[in-house]
Picture 1: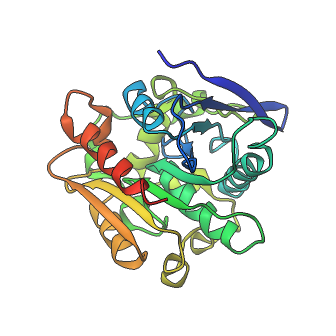
Picture 2: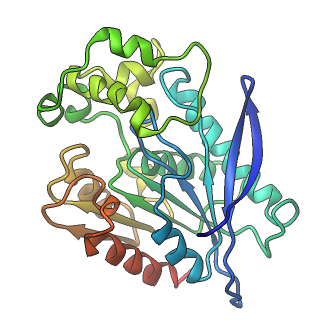
Amino acid sequence: MITAETYSFQTFSGINLFADLYRTAEVSSPSKPTILYFHGGGLLYGTRDDLPEAYIQLLTRAGHNLISFDYPLAPESRLSVIIDTVIKAILWFTQHAKTTLQLSDNKYVLFGRSAGAYLCLLAASRIQMTEHQAPEAISAYYGYASLDLINFRTPSKHYLSFLHVDDRTVQSLIKPDPIAYAPIEQRFALYLYARQSGTWLNFLLNENDQVLDYALSDNELSILPPTFLAASTTDEDVPFKASKELSKTIPNSTLFTVYGLNHDFDRDLNNEAGIHSYQKLLEWLSQF
Protein backbone atom coordinates (compact mmCIF):
# COMPACT_ATOMS: atom_id res chain seq x y z
CA MET A 1 0.00 0.00 0.00
CA ILE A 2 1.26 3.45 -0.91
CA THR A 3 1.33 5.87 2.00
CA ALA A 4 0.28 9.46 1.38
CA GLU A 5 1.65 12.55 3.08
CA THR A 6 -1.28 14.82 3.93
CA TYR A 7 -1.04 18.61 3.90
CA SER A 8 -3.57 21.32 4.71
CA PHE A 9 -3.40 23.82 1.86
CA GLN A 10 -6.31 26.11 2.75
CA THR A 11 -8.87 26.84 5.42
CA PHE A 12 -12.25 27.53 3.89
CA SER A 13 -15.31 28.63 5.90
CA GLY A 14 -14.02 26.86 8.98
CA ILE A 15 -12.99 23.60 7.30
CA ASN A 16 -9.50 22.49 6.35
CA LEU A 17 -8.88 21.49 2.75
CA PHE A 18 -6.31 18.75 2.38
CA ALA A 19 -3.95 17.45 -0.27
CA ASP A 20 -2.44 13.96 -0.33
CA LEU A 21 1.06 13.62 -1.78
CA TYR A 22 2.16 10.25 -3.17
CA ARG A 23 5.89 10.40 -3.79
CA THR A 24 7.65 8.55 -6.54
CA ALA A 25 10.62 6.41 -5.55
CA GLU A 26 12.07 6.75 -9.03
CA VAL A 27 14.81 9.22 -9.84
CA SER A 28 14.70 10.73 -13.30
CA SER A 29 16.71 13.50 -14.89
CA PRO A 30 15.16 15.82 -15.72
CA SER A 31 12.40 15.24 -13.22
CA LYS A 32 8.91 14.49 -14.50
CA PRO A 33 6.06 16.91 -13.80
CA THR A 34 3.95 16.32 -10.71
CA ILE A 35 0.39 15.20 -11.43
CA LEU A 36 -2.27 17.28 -9.65
CA TYR A 37 -5.46 15.23 -9.36
CA PHE A 38 -9.06 16.42 -8.90
CA HIS A 39 -11.80 13.86 -8.33
CA GLY A 40 -15.19 13.53 -9.97
CA GLY A 41 -18.68 13.27 -8.50
CA GLY A 42 -20.77 15.80 -10.37
CA LEU A 43 -19.41 18.52 -8.05
CA LEU A 44 -21.91 17.23 -5.46
CA TYR A 45 -20.00 14.29 -3.99
CA GLY A 46 -16.57 12.66 -4.12
CA THR A 47 -13.30 12.37 -2.24
CA ARG A 48 -9.70 13.18 -2.97
CA ASP A 49 -8.72 9.54 -2.30
CA ASP A 50 -10.99 7.95 -4.89
CA LEU A 51 -8.24 7.12 -7.41
CA PRO A 52 -7.62 3.35 -7.28
CA GLU A 53 -4.26 2.37 -5.81
CA ALA A 54 -3.38 0.43 -8.96
CA TYR A 55 -3.33 3.69 -10.91
CA ILE A 56 -1.45 5.56 -8.20
CA GLN A 57 1.23 2.87 -8.31
CA LEU A 58 1.38 3.00 -12.09
CA LEU A 59 1.84 6.77 -12.14
CA THR A 60 4.37 6.97 -9.31
CA ARG A 61 6.42 4.01 -10.56
CA ALA A 62 6.70 5.85 -13.86
CA GLY A 63 8.47 8.69 -12.03
CA HIS A 64 5.62 11.11 -11.34
CA ASN A 65 4.75 12.51 -7.94
CA LEU A 66 0.97 12.65 -7.52
CA ILE A 67 -1.06 15.03 -5.38
CA SER A 68 -4.82 14.68 -4.91
CA PHE A 69 -6.82 17.65 -3.65
CA ASP A 70 -10.00 18.38 -1.74
CA TYR A 71 -12.35 21.02 -3.06
CA PRO A 72 -15.64 22.30 -1.63
CA LEU A 73 -18.77 20.59 -2.91
CA ALA A 74 -22.09 21.93 -4.14
CA PRO A 75 -24.72 22.93 -3.26
CA GLU A 76 -23.23 24.02 0.07
CA SER A 77 -20.63 25.89 -2.02
CA ARG A 78 -21.39 27.25 -5.46
CA LEU A 79 -19.37 26.72 -8.62
CA SER A 80 -17.78 30.17 -8.42
CA VAL A 81 -16.27 29.20 -5.08
CA ILE A 82 -15.33 25.70 -6.22
CA ILE A 83 -13.33 26.84 -9.25
CA ASP A 84 -11.67 29.60 -7.22
CA THR A 85 -10.58 27.01 -4.65
CA VAL A 86 -9.21 24.68 -7.34
CA ILE A 87 -7.12 27.50 -8.77
CA LYS A 88 -5.83 28.33 -5.28
CA ALA A 89 -4.91 24.67 -4.80
CA ILE A 90 -2.88 24.71 -8.01
CA LEU A 91 -1.14 27.95 -7.06
CA TRP A 92 -0.42 26.54 -3.59
CA PHE A 93 1.43 23.71 -5.29
CA THR A 94 3.50 25.98 -7.51
CA GLN A 95 4.44 28.14 -4.52
CA HIS A 96 5.19 25.30 -2.10
CA ALA A 97 6.56 22.51 -4.31
CA LYS A 98 10.21 23.22 -3.55
CA THR A 99 9.75 24.27 0.08
CA THR A 100 6.91 22.59 1.96
CA LEU A 101 6.78 19.56 -0.34
CA GLN A 102 10.54 19.39 -0.96
CA LEU A 103 10.19 18.52 -4.63
CA SER A 104 12.87 19.30 -7.18
CA ASP A 105 10.68 21.66 -9.22
CA ASN A 106 7.13 22.90 -9.61
CA LYS A 107 6.29 21.66 -13.08
CA TYR A 108 2.85 20.10 -13.10
CA VAL A 109 0.19 18.32 -15.11
CA LEU A 110 -3.51 18.63 -14.29
CA PHE A 111 -5.50 15.39 -14.11
CA GLY A 112 -9.22 15.14 -13.51
CA ARG A 113 -11.97 12.61 -13.95
CA SER A 114 -15.49 13.65 -14.97
CA ALA A 115 -16.34 16.83 -13.01
CA GLY A 116 -12.68 16.95 -11.96
CA ALA A 117 -11.70 17.05 -15.64
CA TYR A 118 -14.08 19.96 -16.14
CA LEU A 119 -12.46 21.82 -13.24
CA CYS A 120 -8.99 21.16 -14.67
CA LEU A 121 -9.91 22.52 -18.09
CA LEU A 122 -11.56 25.61 -16.61
CA ALA A 123 -8.73 26.24 -14.14
CA ALA A 124 -6.03 25.82 -16.78
CA SER A 125 -7.72 28.36 -19.02
CA ARG A 126 -8.07 30.91 -16.23
CA ILE A 127 -4.50 30.42 -15.03
CA GLN A 128 -3.25 30.99 -18.57
CA MET A 129 -4.78 34.46 -18.41
CA THR A 130 -2.56 35.38 -15.46
CA GLU A 131 1.16 35.62 -14.80
CA HIS A 132 1.08 32.36 -12.86
CA GLN A 133 2.72 29.17 -14.05
CA ALA A 134 0.50 27.20 -16.43
CA PRO A 135 0.33 23.39 -16.55
CA GLU A 136 2.60 21.46 -18.88
CA ALA A 137 -0.38 19.36 -19.95
CA ILE A 138 -3.88 18.21 -18.97
CA SER A 139 -5.39 14.75 -18.64
CA ALA A 140 -9.19 14.83 -18.86
CA TYR A 141 -11.01 11.54 -18.34
CA TYR A 142 -14.64 11.56 -19.52
CA GLY A 143 -14.90 15.29 -18.98
CA TYR A 144 -16.49 18.35 -20.56
CA ALA A 145 -15.74 22.04 -20.98
CA SER A 146 -19.24 23.46 -20.68
CA LEU A 147 -22.36 22.97 -18.59
CA ASP A 148 -24.47 24.15 -21.51
CA LEU A 149 -25.33 20.67 -22.75
CA ILE A 150 -28.89 19.46 -23.23
CA ASN A 151 -27.99 16.33 -21.25
CA PHE A 152 -27.23 18.46 -18.19
CA ARG A 153 -30.41 20.57 -18.41
CA THR A 154 -33.05 17.89 -18.92
CA PRO A 155 -34.06 14.73 -17.02
CA SER A 156 -31.68 11.88 -17.80
CA LYS A 157 -33.29 8.75 -19.24
CA HIS A 158 -30.40 6.76 -17.82
CA TYR A 159 -30.82 8.02 -14.27
CA LEU A 160 -34.61 7.82 -14.43
CA SER A 161 -34.13 4.05 -14.62
CA PHE A 162 -32.68 4.16 -11.09
CA LEU A 163 -34.72 4.18 -7.89
CA HIS A 164 -36.57 7.50 -7.58
CA VAL A 165 -35.10 9.99 -5.10
CA ASP A 166 -37.59 12.25 -3.34
CA ASP A 167 -37.31 15.82 -2.07
CA ARG A 168 -37.16 14.74 1.56
CA THR A 169 -34.09 12.60 0.92
CA VAL A 170 -32.41 15.45 -0.90
CA GLN A 171 -32.99 17.91 1.93
CA SER A 172 -31.55 15.45 4.43
CA LEU A 173 -28.32 15.25 2.41
CA ILE A 174 -27.66 18.98 2.15
CA LYS A 175 -25.57 20.28 5.04
CA PRO A 176 -25.82 23.70 6.72
CA ASP A 177 -22.08 24.34 6.31
CA PRO A 178 -19.55 23.76 3.51
CA ILE A 179 -18.16 20.24 3.01
CA ALA A 180 -15.28 18.93 0.91
CA TYR A 181 -15.36 15.18 1.49
CA ALA A 182 -18.45 13.12 0.65
CA PRO A 183 -18.07 9.44 -0.34
CA ILE A 184 -20.32 8.20 -3.11
CA GLU A 185 -22.16 5.97 -0.64
CA GLN A 186 -23.27 9.03 1.31
CA ARG A 187 -24.20 11.54 -1.40
CA PHE A 188 -24.76 9.80 -4.74
CA ALA A 189 -28.51 10.09 -4.16
CA LEU A 190 -28.15 13.87 -4.36
CA TYR A 191 -26.58 13.67 -7.81
CA LEU A 192 -29.12 11.05 -8.83
CA TYR A 193 -31.96 13.42 -7.92
CA ALA A 194 -30.32 16.30 -9.77
CA ARG A 195 -30.04 14.30 -12.97
CA GLN A 196 -33.45 12.63 -12.64
CA SER A 197 -35.13 16.01 -12.29
CA GLY A 198 -32.97 17.91 -14.78
CA THR A 199 -32.10 20.44 -12.06
CA TRP A 200 -28.38 19.73 -11.69
CA LEU A 201 -27.35 23.27 -12.68
CA ASN A 202 -29.57 24.70 -9.94
CA PHE A 203 -27.32 22.99 -7.40
CA LEU A 204 -24.20 24.56 -8.91
CA LEU A 205 -24.97 28.11 -9.95
CA ASN A 206 -25.91 31.26 -8.11
CA GLU A 207 -29.15 32.94 -9.13
CA ASN A 208 -27.39 35.57 -11.25
CA ASP A 209 -24.77 33.25 -12.76
CA GLN A 210 -24.74 32.67 -16.49
CA VAL A 211 -24.00 29.15 -17.70
CA LEU A 212 -21.60 30.45 -20.34
CA ASP A 213 -19.51 32.12 -17.62
CA TYR A 214 -18.41 28.59 -16.75
CA ALA A 215 -17.80 27.35 -20.28
CA LEU A 216 -14.73 27.49 -22.49
CA SER A 217 -15.13 29.00 -25.93
CA ASP A 218 -13.46 27.50 -28.99
CA ASN A 219 -10.88 30.30 -28.79
CA GLU A 220 -10.09 29.46 -25.17
CA LEU A 221 -9.89 25.75 -25.96
CA SER A 222 -7.56 26.45 -28.87
CA ILE A 223 -4.85 27.81 -26.57
CA LEU A 224 -5.01 25.15 -23.86
CA PRO A 225 -1.91 23.06 -23.15
CA PRO A 226 -1.64 19.62 -24.80
CA THR A 227 -4.46 17.43 -23.49
CA PHE A 228 -4.98 13.68 -23.15
CA LEU A 229 -8.67 12.80 -23.34
CA ALA A 230 -10.27 9.46 -22.49
CA ALA A 231 -13.93 8.47 -22.81
CA SER A 232 -16.31 5.64 -23.65
CA THR A 233 -18.56 5.71 -26.71
CA THR A 234 -21.52 4.54 -24.60
CA ASP A 235 -21.11 6.97 -21.71
CA GLU A 236 -24.62 7.56 -20.32
CA ASP A 237 -23.59 10.34 -17.94
CA VAL A 238 -21.41 12.68 -20.02
CA PRO A 239 -21.96 12.29 -23.77
CA PHE A 240 -18.98 10.90 -25.67
CA LYS A 241 -19.31 13.74 -28.16
CA ALA A 242 -18.08 16.15 -25.46
CA SER A 243 -14.64 14.50 -25.50
CA LYS A 244 -14.79 14.06 -29.27
CA GLU A 245 -15.38 17.77 -29.80
CA LEU A 246 -12.63 18.69 -27.34
CA SER A 247 -10.20 16.50 -29.29
CA LYS A 248 -11.00 18.48 -32.44
CA THR A 249 -10.62 21.89 -30.81
CA ILE A 250 -7.68 21.55 -28.42
CA PRO A 251 -4.37 21.51 -30.34
CA ASN A 252 -1.96 18.67 -29.61
CA SER A 253 -4.73 16.62 -28.02
CA THR A 254 -5.07 12.85 -28.01
CA LEU A 255 -8.35 10.97 -27.54
CA PHE A 256 -8.21 7.48 -26.04
CA THR A 257 -11.51 5.84 -26.93
CA VAL A 258 -13.06 2.78 -25.32
CA TYR A 259 -16.14 1.09 -26.70
CA GLY A 260 -19.29 -0.08 -24.98
CA LEU A 261 -18.27 0.71 -21.40
CA ASN A 262 -19.72 2.86 -18.64
CA HIS A 263 -18.99 6.52 -17.91
CA ASP A 264 -16.17 5.89 -15.42
CA PHE A 265 -14.79 2.91 -17.30
CA ASP A 266 -11.52 2.92 -15.34
CA ARG A 267 -13.36 2.18 -12.09
CA ASP A 268 -13.55 -1.52 -13.03
CA LEU A 269 -10.08 -2.86 -12.33
CA ASN A 270 -11.07 -6.22 -13.79
CA ASN A 271 -11.45 -4.65 -17.21
CA GLU A 272 -8.10 -4.09 -18.91
CA ALA A 273 -9.38 -0.92 -20.59
CA GLY A 274 -8.65 1.12 -17.47
CA ILE A 275 -5.03 0.01 -17.03
CA HIS A 276 -4.48 0.27 -20.77
CA SER A 277 -5.67 3.88 -20.77
CA TYR A 278 -3.23 4.82 -18.00
CA GLN A 279 -0.39 3.10 -19.82
CA LYS A 280 -1.23 5.15 -22.90
CA LEU A 281 -1.45 8.27 -20.73
CA LEU A 282 2.05 7.62 -19.39
CA GLU A 283 3.43 7.09 -22.88
CA TRP A 284 1.90 10.41 -23.86
CA LEU A 285 3.23 12.17 -20.74
CA SER A 286 6.78 11.03 -21.49
CA GLN A 287 7.16 14.00 -23.86
CA PHE A 288 6.91 16.52 -21.00
